[in-house]
Image 1 (cartoon, rainbow, N blue to C red):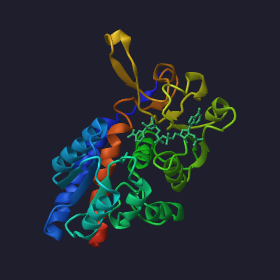
Image 2 (image 1 turned 180 degrees about the horizontal axis):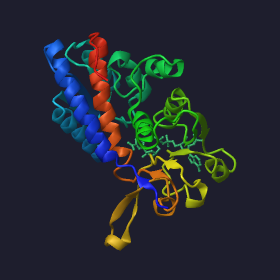
Image 3 (image 1 turned 180 degrees about the vertical axis):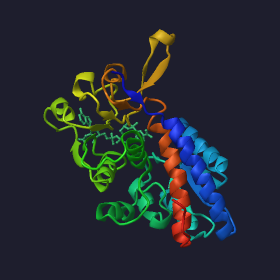
Length: 296
Ligand code: NDP
């Protein structure tokens, strides 16, 4: 048996297209298209690529994209002022501050300053609280992408046992809560978990979100299980030439693909879903703020 590959790129393109349709519909009621503002402080090359891609995908979906770029020595007070300005701007529906921020800026304070109704990254305390309390709100993007792909692959995940490896605020915890919201039975593993391989073997769905290349081995995964690999790790690839690298996930793809039911590749699995869910959140934020109904 060989696992079915979950094509995150294809699903993301579908979500983008639906966001574009919804954005066009909203434009009729709002008199303008939904707008996402992204703030980038500093010149981290990876962040620069992410921000550029977010802008391009936003525009491709027919929405307005604002990019605010400031040098690395921008003060925390100035960043807070930028966020306050975007909060107050009625023409802006979603605000995302690209992480990581330079060391002299308190990321929690900046995230905390984003108005929860515009928090398209789903990272503010208000958004986290709404998720824990089961109230409607904007959900974090990568975790929502995981759940959506699991449902696409397996259908209803109610009653499935899920092991999420990692408990970060960005990925692990919200992923676990979102699966719980879907009535799955969820266990969160982390660096202190005892006998992780045995725990993972019990799972119908495994979500490695650790940042350790190919940590989850083939014999950890139950035959027929679904593996949603969040990890993105760059490793040396001397076979491609001197100094070359390649991306791998937290799961040993070649070992797992032989007997799992479904697996997301890295790259091309969970990664593309993150921006797709960001666009979806921008549309949802615009609709919620203006009390406009969205089609399903
Ligand atoms: P963090 O470093 O914040 O969290 C890693 C988690 O893994 C921690 O909870 C840690 O446990 C746990 N962990 C570390 N070592 C082990 C171990 N040996 N066994 C079990 N658990 C362990 O990372 P993030 O959550 O931010 O990201 C995780 C991965 O996902 C990274 O590779 C990142 O690049 C990728 N990522 C991918 C995205 C995408 O779009 N696909 C988006 C965001 C992240 P403890 O809490 O005990 O220290």
